[in-house]
Image (cartoon, rainbow, N blue to C red; front, side, top):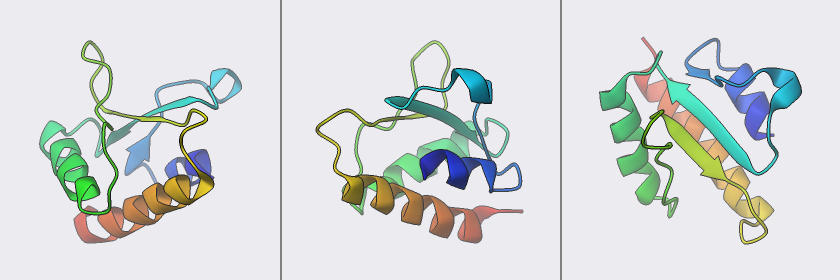
Length: 92
C-alpha cells in the first residue's frame, strides 16, 4: 500500500531502495527529488494528522516510515492519505 503510493506518484515521491530489496518494516522515501524544505513541510503537516517520527536517517535524510508491530493498518492508511493530499497541494 505505501510502496504503491510512492511508486504511483509520478516521481513526486521516490524510494531510493531497489524494489527487490525493500523492507516491509522501514520505508524510506524522498519528496520532490530530495527537496529538504518540502520534506520538512510534509513532516510538520503530518503531525496534524497524528503522524510522528517520520524523519529519515540523519546520514541519508528524506522520510522514513517505520511500520513495526505498533503501527496499525489505520496508521498506514492515514499516512497514504496524507501523502496523496500533500502531493495534490504541492506537486509542481
